[in-house]
Length: 280
Image (cartoon, rainbow, N blue to C red; front, side, top):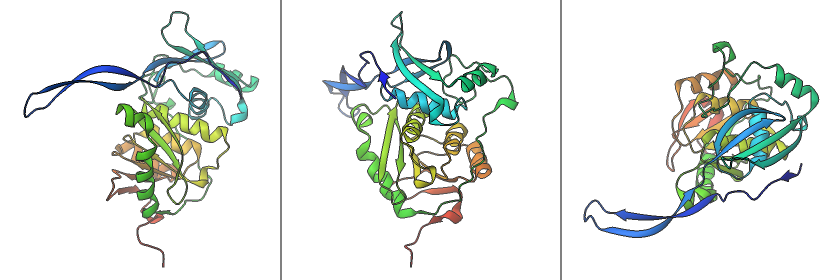
């Protein structure tokens, strides 16, 4: 689907800085790239739904992934169009999403308002019964090789272009079974990076059982829910998972590997699906 964009802010901007050392106290002037953070109002025409703080690239992917992981759409075909508009008050951008008529009716019937959401995953819900829970995964569990995890981690570092320039953004990557990174999205928000990646995977109709996710952030429960909603069976996180993320991994049958470093990783769920020795 076409994305009609106005001129968008860059992903990073140069800023003047002064650095100093703790040992000698010497100050050095220089220039560093800063990651751009922009307010994006998601609008299901004509109704505003949420304001997210995002990096201003890959917004079509973000609209699709966010709509899917929020349960507003069931498939990519439920979205008719995505348009980016400038806010009249120059306060940010509007991401205007046109839904299929039946999905718009369903959306209007939902009693949820998360305008001003900060990315915690549950801001704005009415009660605990509204806690998100992904649909059951029908795909069989997949076996993952430790060598593939190590390869993905090495490949990920080289692919994080915006973070290399700014040191201020998260990444979510989709990896082939052998660990090759086939797609990556970056954003100042960890949830946004994953939503953008899921949007890309939906738009390009990538099968959920064809690979695994790697995320550079901690794995909180809503990150696990997004992985499960897409239908993937394995996620690797650079940082640690929360207790609720581990519970959801068990509930959804997702293999959860975290605290993944160059030389080690910890399996929090699905150890029987992780092969750490070379196959005979």
